[in-house]
Amino acid sequence: MALATLDVVVLDCPDPRALAGFYAEVLGGTVRGEGDWVDLDLPGGRRLAFQAAPGYVPPRWPGLDGSQQFHLDLAVEDLDVAEKGVLALGARPLDTEDRSRSFRVYADPAGHPFCLCAC
Image (cartoon, rainbow, N blue to C red; front, side, top):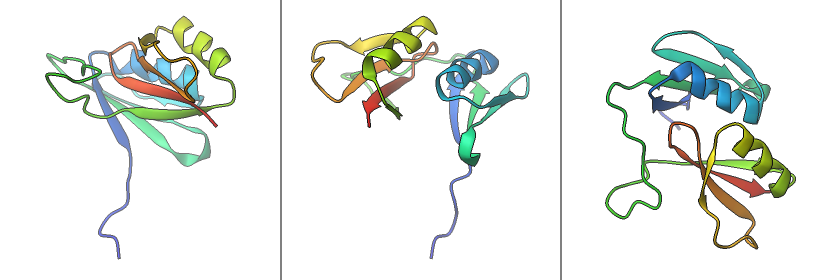
């Protein structure tokens, strides 16, 4: 029997409202809150949260001298269409070497790595 259930994944960042807005454009949903904590209510009842972190330092990918901390895998129908969309929203590519793979790696505007994965 489990001792707990997962409530929310929280991303530290310098500007919670801005990063929640980025993910709202990528995943849909509704942004709630202001200040140091902002929630993104996603379709299907899931939620992401964004917390202000003074002195925030983004993870490095690949993490040769430190950990990437975590990353999100986002399922998409068309990698090219999704890539164009996330780049327009402020993401930056982290790995452009192998375009034949079923995933592509990016950083969100605060520097967190995430992958677009063909489903």
